[in-house]
Image (cartoon, rainbow, N blue to C red; front, side):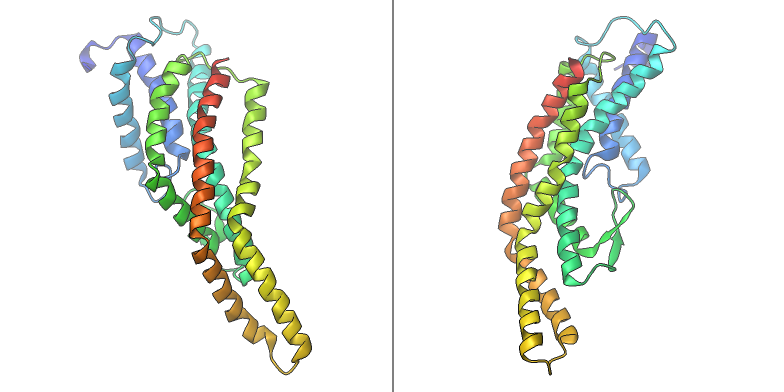
Length: 261
């Protein structure tokens, strides 16, 4: 790409491509973590845009936007397309964090919080553990490659500057957001059930042997039982996460079609 031969149309098209890609990089797992320096993310956005832009010559509009009012609206729409891709994937991570929150509360770690690198909010230390494990699984199945492929395919499905927001698009995104609770329950089920059984046993012991200080004995038992159940449930967690990651990968293309309709 010769930077000195770019026309006004080329510059406008490149900026729109950059905005769409930036929306993905900002919120997508692995790329959008706050542990990744801002300069690295900016460089990544520019690099991906420069690599993709020359291959889009045949499908990009040949004329510039005629209205100065319409241009920023199109720019915002391009950012929204990218944000939708990243937010869809974050649904799975939100479900994993929810599972960790529920298990952590039962283990007695309700006030042991750390900073989530994606949202900047405080979450349970068990929720952060589940988040890290989910990221491992995401990288193992090459989920970070999906976003790069999805970015490239989006330009073939959604014409540049021609995206639309419809009622079907909004309802589809809301329906996907509801999956976060379902994912959390499925992932956290082994730990939740195990800790409920432990709590029941502690209650029976407290009634039958009142000499035992159940508050002192119960805390380390719950911590050990919770960590053991999380460790033994890794295979189940991988199966659930893999299923939903592939499902959301398909949903990304559904969202693209709704943006284009």
